[in-house]
Amino acid sequence: MKSHFLFAPLLLAFASSANAEQTVQELEYRSAFEGYQAYSDSEIQNWPKANQLVDEIGGWRVYAREPYEDQEKDKPASAQDPSKTRSHNHGGAQ
Image 1 (cartoon, rainbow, N blue to C red):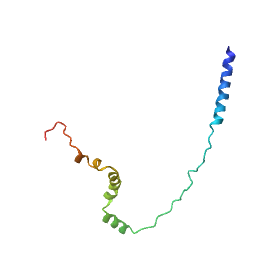
Image 2: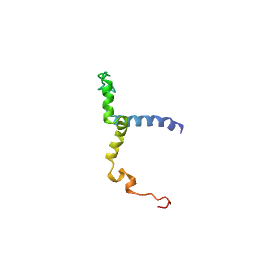
Image 3: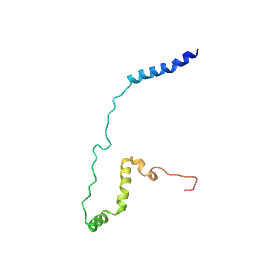
Image 4: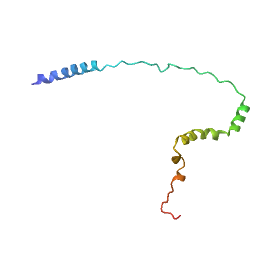
């Protein structure tokens, strides 16, 4: 009866290798460096003029606000300002 247990792993190995041959997929290799662009220095600019331009635009606060303005544009009108669409009365007198 022990002889049956010796052949079981061999049968399983053979069955799994037969199934593996049927499910082999062709892999496509793509290098992570494909399309790599080396760093290049940007053109040197006049710092006072660059600072003046930023000041005219509105300073760093405008740049910090830009990503949030894009998100607000993507939301439906009812979700943009929750204070206009619903009021919360948490037990307080109005």
